[in-house]
Amino acid sequence: MFIQRARTDLIVPLNYRLAIDQLYRLIDRVGDAVIICEPTYADDLVGQGRKVVTTAEWDSIVRTAPVGEDAPADAPQHFAVQLFTSGTTAEPKAAVLEHRHLASYILASVEFASADENDVALVSVPPYHIAGVANLLSNVFAGRRILYLPAFDPSTWLDTVRTEGVTQAMVVPTMLARIVEELAEATSAETPTLRTISYGGSRMPETVLERALNLFPETGFVNAYGLTETSSSISVLGPDDHRKALEGDDQARRRLSSVGRPLPGIEIEIREDGRVQPPNLHGEVWVR
Image (cartoon, rainbow, N blue to C red; front, top):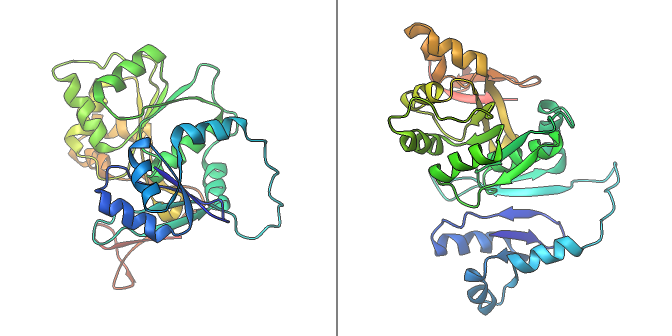
């Protein structure tokens, strides 16, 4: 389900897995908007006096709409997307990202049209998560063919990687755990085309990661850590770090629980009560 905010062209993807009352509370918070949804929700929302367009109608509108004009370079704020955070400790918070925020992340982390002719990206992260937004934009900017799974299933994911020759994929830890479980006693995932698996969104269990590294021996693993408010990743643990950690001693393996090094232009401190902490102590992550 998506919401198109009136007057601002702001897109608000919503988590359809939420309980219906939670979903409607988020719709109320967005305010005056056009709701783009599956027919399952349409009749009820229309009955409440909402402005509704079904997904099939929206697809038809987009395919036949004329190309719009580029915004002037000196224009004020141009909102792109509003994402509701998970609401772990309270009601979901609304994070509004402008086009310049998303563009800044993409320009700093992706080389334009850098994809090989046979590159294929498999996206199975939902669009109401910043990882789903950033992953989609990254692949578009790189010029990579994109496959989108409508719903995650480990068997379907593996079959798609094998039959479509997928070269890049992004998952969250629970997805990788289910893929590992699906492979059970296998010694290899048998996905020769898969060059990169990136993951993020929550803490990755080390046992799952170690098993995955062994099942995908020719695949480079990338841990991308970030926040909705930072337009995705602020630090990355790359493929070489993963392999060196797996092959090293217990001290080296600690790196598998790391979120890696800050990306260029990012400064990070760990603070407690506003004071910068020395290494190996806990605290809040402060990022600039």
